[in-house]
Length: 381
Image (cartoon, rainbow, N blue to C red):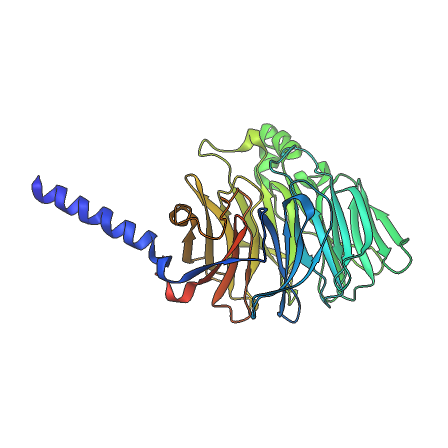
């Protein structure tokens, strides 16, 4: 018995040491005199500037992360809970997506506010009230939008729509491929498509639940708006579609309806579609974040980072994208009780991150600070 207790004690010590393996490979960074929680990060296309949003909408920083210098401060959005941030491909614009502290209607079609600003001046280019999704095209000429059942291309020079089309039962998200040729749109499962799935065709109850709770993705020609195909895969409620930078993959963030969640609590799934074949890949990634988790591919496309949660605290998981194996994990729990120097504010449940150009380090949010983490020096999971 004594030997067993000793073995268990040593096992606990080993787990604790492993869990805290990042203690020597991170650094906490204060951005200017930030006093509010940071909630959005995006790295400029030339990888030199970090766009940083915070709650209250001010200040919004453009930050030279290499020299650790605030370049500009803007007042944007004026949204109490802040916004997520994404640069356009050429760096001319920044897209802001309003955030909330809670998913106010997690089981329904989501309508939120978006804003496009000029990255150089901070001036508003266009504001979108109660839209499902907004994306900036790679040529920076248009905003691709989804509101109600209407998909449109809004000319950013004129502020007017050049083209629109409707898609029945459209849901929460769309995306346009980097080459500007394809548009992906999420929508509810159509009754005429349900019998294409053997499990639904054989079971009337399963079919009824599928029509009520499941969604699909349809691919359209971005020039003619002609339907090309519907991906043969059922998803939960789709909240975000995102193409990889090379256009080879489409990443799908989907979260089950509350009535479809398992007893283990909320889970979010990031699934992958191979756009070269149009087929769903039988590999996915899971997050236990309370909020919609941020996820990003590394610049070389080999790694996928996802925000998740363990017990009470946020984590960043980094996976090998092709194999789906988790390689590294950063647990913020052990860092919340450090000496409170620099006016540290505790993090909330909406962490975000960016891969830095070397694809060996990341910057992630933690309260009103950033954390710089070199995961290659950490213990692998």
